[in-house]
Amino acid sequence: MRCCTDFRIYDDRMTPEPPKPRFFALIPCAGNGSRAATASPKQYKKIAGQAMVWHTLQAFRQVGNISGVWVVVSPDDEGFKQAFPDFNQPNDQRVAVGGATRALSVRNGLQALLKQTAKPGDWVLVHDAARCLITPEQITALIDACQNDAVGGLLALPLPDTLKSSIDGRVSATVDRSDKWLAQTPQMFRIGGLLAALVAAGDAVTDESSAMEAQGFKPLLVNGSAQNFKVTYPEDFALAEAILQSRMKATHDH
Image 1 (spheres, rainbow, N blue to C red):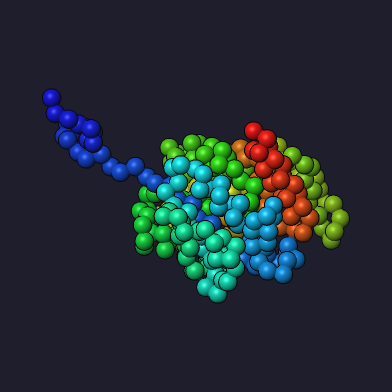
Image 2: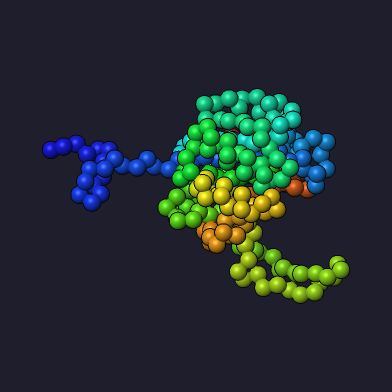
C-alpha cells in the first residue's frame, strides 16, 4: 500500500495537497490619537503598567495558529521600541510604512506582508491598536467562524441602545436598531482580496469590511464583546485600566 499522507486524490490522479492558508495579524499603529488628548500617540500611553499597544499584541501572541504579528508604524515613529522593548520574537514584525489614514496604513502593511512572507490566499486579521481589551478567546472565535467562509468577517456587537438621527443638534428621528451592529475588530479577510478592495475603495474607508462591501461582498458578523471597545476619549482610559486590573487580579487569584 502506498503512503498518501501528504496527498489527496483529485480526478483519480495523485495531486499534492494544497498548502493550508495561514493567519496573520496586522495592527495599524501609526495614528496620533488626537481625540484622546494625550501628549504622545495614545497607543503608547500606559494602562495597567504597560503601553496600550502591548496589551493588544499580547492577546494575538497567545493565539497558537497566528503565524505572525505585524505592526504598521509611521516612518518617523519613536515610541514603539520604548513601549514594546520585547517585540523581537521570531514571528514579530514592525514595518515603518504607516500612512496618513488608517486605510493607507493597512494597505501598505498588506503589501509589505505579501512581499516578505504571505500569499494572497492567506488570511489577515486587522485589529485596532487601541482595542487593547481584545482576548485570545475572541480572536479564536473569529478565526473558527470565518476560516471556511467564502468572504470572511468581523467581530461586531448588536446595537444595544436607542439610536437617534439629528439635524442641527436636535433629534430628527429614532432609527430602528433591530438590524444594526457596532463594528469591531479584528476583521478577517484573505490578504489578496482585501488589498484589492482597499486599492479600489481609496483612503476614505474607516474599516476593512467597508472596502469589501463596496466590492459587493457580505462579510460575516461574529458576536464580539462590549469590553472590546476602542479606547478613544480620555475617560476610556480609566475604564480600560479597571478592566485590565480586574483581569490581572482574577488571573493571579487562580
